[in-house]
Amino acid sequence: MSVCSSTGSDGENTDELASVSWYHFDLSRHAAEALLLSNGVDGSFLLRSSQKGPDCFALSVRAKDSVKHFHVRRICGRYSFGFNEFQSLLEFTSHMANQPLLGSESGNLIVLKHPYPRQVEEPSIYESVCVHTAMQSGRRHSDLVATAQALGTKEGYLVKQGAIIKSWKQRWFTLNRNELKYFKDKMFAEPIRTLDLTACSAVQFDYSQERVNCFCLVFPERTFYLCARTGVEADEWIKILRWKLVSLRGSESDTHLLHLYLLYVIPDYVLHSIISISLYLCDSRLCIAFHDFHFMYSMCSRLLHSGAFVESGLEMIKNVKNTLTNNDYMDLSIIEG
Image (cartoon, rainbow, N blue to C red; front, top):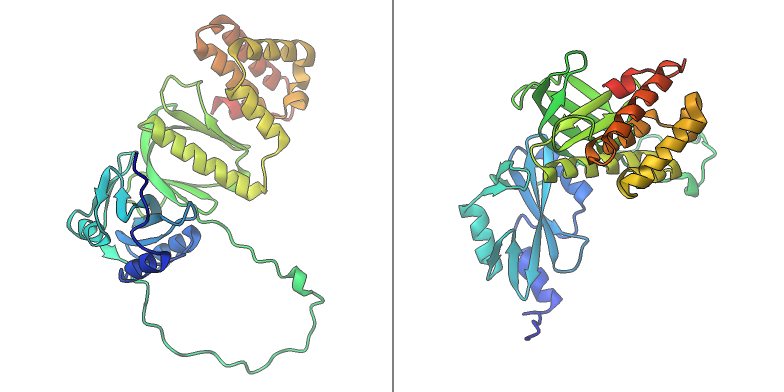
């Protein structure tokens, strides 16, 4: 087995990439999204270094109101992108120009139209400081903590269940910062609704609907049920939405981690025993024990669809609903969508 060595030093590789006007060196993912969204157009793209390693890069592409990122790797002087491998940087960049159509795993097509230049002409004009006030704020250097909200963009079609009439309709969704918006279709400028993710308590796969690739977002006033075209696409949405919630809260709470473990890791028969004991012992105080009725409902639904405890699952869902109905401070619409 032959061991591949680098075709040149790091300096030579850097010089090679520097010849590409749309290579932005160590530009971060966040800065790339901010740059393309604020100053680019649909189809603007750039190449940048990735944090995954010295020979790893990312092709960042603006697709309408979001920015998608694709892996590019340099192996032994060759460039690997998707299923293709290019013998040189020139061959790779020529491919970007001649075959600009990209298809992601979610089925969305993106056209590379406008390479975003690394160097943009800038005016050499600065505002002058007329007065630097002597008023003191009392803050110290340690109080100047740099913070910025992550953009974390994503967009695509999802099928959503209605609030009153439980029909399913396809909607165009966009995710930017802490807002998830959905539109009647891709070409509409005004959203039907904007969901503030700071109010969202959970994002998880859902097994209570008779549909595949379904997941839900839990809000105090309502649970939104959404379905993706593929399992990969549903997983992508869940991952980025959960990442958003974690970044908004700072870290995962112990309760939420326990919920994830109970819901996705333990066997069905163990889950069945836990719910049975909880319902028997806690009754209307179930919320105190588990803090999240929707979580209990999801666990029961998992049993319902597992095939092993169908009858028990139905009975448990009924018990949870009765518990909710008897509870003064819990809205039944949380689990009924």
